[in-house]
Amino acid sequence: MSDRKLIGLGVIGTVIAALCCFTPLLVVGVTVVGLSATVGWLDFVLFPALFFFIGLTVYAVRRRKQRIGNAGGAMPE
Image (cartoon, rainbow, N blue to C red; front, top):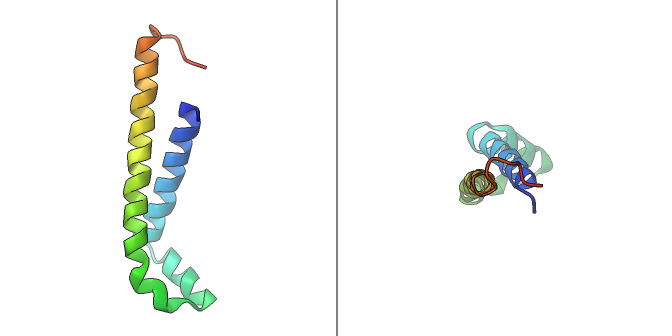
């Protein structure tokens, strides 16, 4: 997977997980569907997902910087 795709996936995943963690967006959505009993367990899924996507973004940015540094300033394909 290319660096741009990894960075994009990491940023999009981080934004979605952050919105669901820190706003009632997901709670309202789950309640509307009728699964309000699972609201108490959402943090056990969302916080690890948030940390995973943040880590993925950091990894992709570092990988991209390393490739640019090794290529002598030229952008990799």
